[in-house]
Amino acid sequence: MEEYKNLEKMLKVYYNNIQTLHRHLIGGNWFGNHEVLGKYYEKIQEDIDYLAELGLAIGIDEPTIQESLNSYKELEIIDRTEKESFVIVKGYFNNIVAQINRINNLPIDVINKLQDMQTFYRIESNYKLYRNNL
Image (cartoon, rainbow, N blue to C red; front, side, top):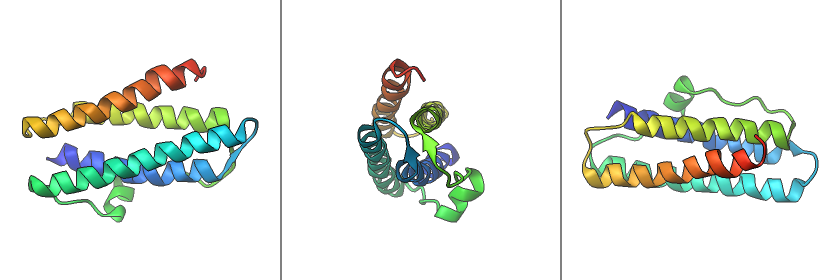
């Protein structure tokens, strides 16, 4: 159950960090890249909400933002290029995939939902962002 909470903590911090990347993006194709980053943090927000409710349904308390920040680093607020921003996001998505692999001993329906989430982040990182030469 601790690994499940760690996933929630990770997502809460990554949500905030991707919002920062979204707001402080600079460079070419700004509109398209700004939109992609917006969709990424919206997806993470949906996953946070779902995981918090699912966790409560199986007896796992939602971590606070302070607990999350004690475990994962908040991103420095500076302007970043498309390349810098998407390299960071790719790393986040790979971390999410790895964290989901650490979760076990939960009901099969919960594991199935986690695997669905994992598939999204794996495709975004290892296919779409990879194809963007990151």
